Image (cartoon, rainbow, N blue to C red):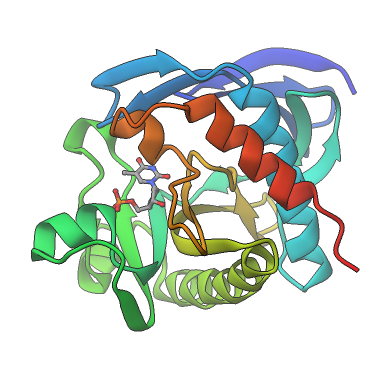
Length: 238
Ligand code: TMP
């Protein structure tokens, strides 16, 4: 597959056209940002890890009935994906209190929620990705109600599959962010990435953070955490 014109450069990935309008190529970068781009850095090897981990997880989810944009891994950092129009929502699923939920509601981190919850944030960097209600999603026409409900249902299914997969590898899935897209023919697909950039992963026993919070909060050993997660995810289960 030939890489064509660059369509888009985000904070962590570049997206290219291909010779087939139904496919695109994503290229993962080592660049890291936090707090809406205010904090910038590099996590050496992150692009390769996030690419390979996302692809592995997308394939696990696809096997379990979740439609995803994954097509084929091209190289360490590059993957062919289906072309989609991204729904402008960041879909966060939480199992345990942490991050912005803990901060906003005055909760300590690490409290298990009675059931998983889904939150929608409007994907708008210039506004700092604000939380949006179902009613706001409707009046702003960010997604039709039917698509929004399908997204919520799929996000909860992804949570069940991913939490079990991670628990089998000694990892507590605290929370994570998903993005969805719609193909030209109207199919809703899980898109973007699933990686330590977009999830909170804690060691089940020690509660050690093995994700981007190490970069956001200057906890040190950022590269080591990404490598440890890649190792755990690659473990073959008997
Ligand atoms: P939050 O607690 O900061 O709202 O983050 C919830 C989850 O979403 C966490 O796993 C990290 C992920 N996330 C992203 O992937 N991108 C972002 O821009 C933010 C703020 C969070």
